[in-house]
Image (cartoon, rainbow, N blue to C red):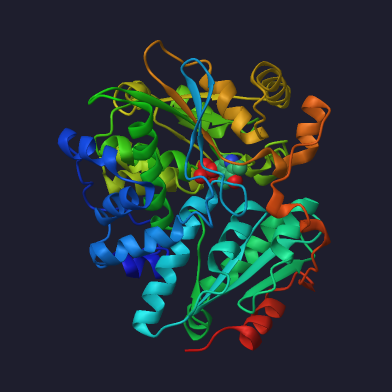
Length: 456
Ligand SMILES: *Cc1c(COP(=O)(O)O)cnc(C)c1O
């Protein structure tokens, strides 16, 4: 299936997750030649391996626009913390979280494809914070696309609300729903699942299972490796604060492509379903009622939507086996691959660990005292678990998934001070807000879409 179709559809035609049939392999000479590239050039090289329906020079125009200095004043800097341990700075974009990295590319790609085809797309989504704002900042003012983002009324931080609701662009619609996140998500599923409605109103999605997002995330693993090494074949470990398994899946793909990655360190918070799987081989997702609200809220996930893509590789790309496992999951609530557990590290490089609220605070505090560097609670989970896997001679890069300014309360709890707010966002709280409040009812959202959605 051509990349641009996957981009617009989000899912494969059968409703399943898409993946390339075979992954390209990167040889040492190619990798070494990439050392000279800047970030947009590297992104065009890596993405062109997955994209055969956008010419290379036009792809470079898109990556130059997505990763421009006006959007990322600093592009994926390496920030040293301790000997052998650094942050990979993925949160320098407009919403201060790593989701900008993929979403800014998607914004450019959507506009490119839609104008070329003379089509329109109404992106319908639900957010508990980071994804929605990254999508809105990437798609604001873009031609051919509008965003309808449902958020649970009164459940986001003041900063997150101000970030989203202060956007005044005509093509951005914030709908504040009287309900919790899962109910917002149910409305999205109901409307997108109604195929007649979906096609009549040109609905699209940018959720974390969108293959284009994963592909854009593969780039920064190559970048991190190139910046942390000086010679061919040297190994690097990456630690990834994980929720939906999208970020670390991109690392798995980079490793499968031949990037010399030693460990992929999966860090979870108290919601440790994935940590348990990588430790034991048993997958036992918890019901929503047992998914804890933690101080690293963007990782409060018990059913990681991208996990199936990794299991596909683990069972030797046997689609029938994956189907049988997910049938078993639906029947019994779990499945057991403990016979394959040794391969998780030996063949795929995965190791895992958990970080608690106390770990998070302690990590933020001690790092701040020791180095003056302030990290956000999610990144702190990554640093805590990474420290268990540091080896001499192998750089460990922790993916910085957000900046501390986004999670001021927890930072204050850890160090007794408020985190610094970037200059461009200091008046965020005072900006006028534009949001439509509505009852938790799919027909009201449908009605709003019918009145405000773009028409072909
Ligand atoms: C989305 C998010 C995560 C989790 O990333 P996944 O790709 O869902 O595993 C971690 N930290 C922050 C700050 C996020 O916004």
